[in-house]
Amino acid sequence: KQEVTQIPAALSVPEGENLVLNCSFTDSAIYNLQWFRQDPGKGLTSLLLIQSSQREQTSGRLNASLDKSSGRSTLYIAASQPGDSATYLCAVDNQAGTALIFGKGTTLSVSS
Amino acid sequence: DGGITQSPKYLFRKEGQNVTLSCEQNLNHDAMYWYRQDPGQGLRLIYYSQIVNDFQKGDIAEGYSVSREKKESFPLTVTSAQKNPTAFYLCASSPRTGSDEKLFFGSGTQLSVL
Image (cartoon, rainbow over all chains, first blue to last red; front, side, top):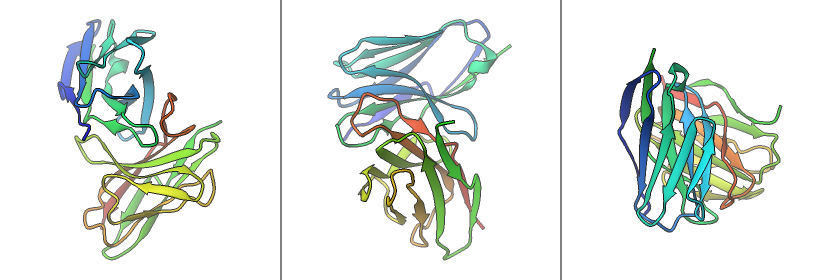
């Protein structure tokens, strides 16, 4: 059964720092991987989707990489800002016709 | 504006009561999902539907029921059989399951037990 793990569970950084969030999954036969952002008490917003054939995706200050063979993905946030403070979740789609499997998330706090 | 609307935002359930959470989307998506989120936990799948009049159980379907009579609507009923219903419930949709398309989420419903 696919399991998704995110490390660390929480992270605090000063404004302007570059940072990396980690996601690992146990079954490398995935269809795609998505990174989401969740603000307290809110729904999730999809940030980046990486197809299984891709190595990375970029959107603004965010860059997500995927190493399917090792079961790992990273989300790189450049020049962090207080507005980046949120919980970041990764999720994998490992079988067509089913739903995403989520990690527990990393809660990021960026101080000014 | 296109999107997913969940209502109510907050809901309280009495002992032995069934309650229904609403989820409506105007994105013309075929697939819809219900997830449960507990504090400090990831999302766990309750039910999903790939098409109208069809739905599948997720990992934690016991004590819940759904219907998909219209493409736009996927209501979730939390029955009295669900003994620990306090959680944040999230509805989502995508063009279809297994597609390389992003998942869209509603803003959630917080269910608490009185």
